[in-house]
Length: 202
Image (tube, rainbow, N blue to C red; front, side, top):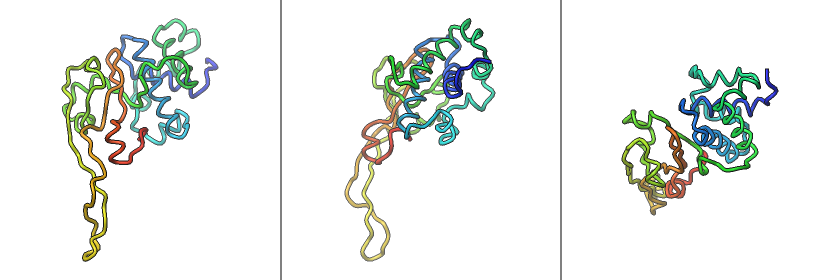
């Protein structure tokens, strides 16, 4: 077996497993960076710690993904002979070190073909838009879901919480940052974060 450290191998395997079979290096690299970006933002977690904190983050690790397992089991020689696995390993190393160019453009999440095929996809239900129209690789129109958040105060007579002043408003939860191959990359919209007081990595 190769001596690649555990976290680097797992990140490379996630990137290789989640990417499409075209082995687009920017698609593979974007996924590697998105994982590392989120782990870094979330208190400097390791890949394993990130997956423990959010078990639904990537299903490649647990759903029998053939490409994921192929890289997890691969030797140095096998990785070197496969351009997709080589790209995944190189990007995993750079992503964890936070060096080089980030193809995800600062993303924490990504979606593949299911974004087009699932009308009830979570991001389509939440509301999303494209940071650049070129990111609309699946021809799915943006979805606006206007929300107003109010500060809560206690009613002096009943003691129950009621709406007070407007805390913030937002139309979208998600905004795309890049698109490569068959993958769109995402972060949270800034208005959503400001209105809800949410964390960019959650």
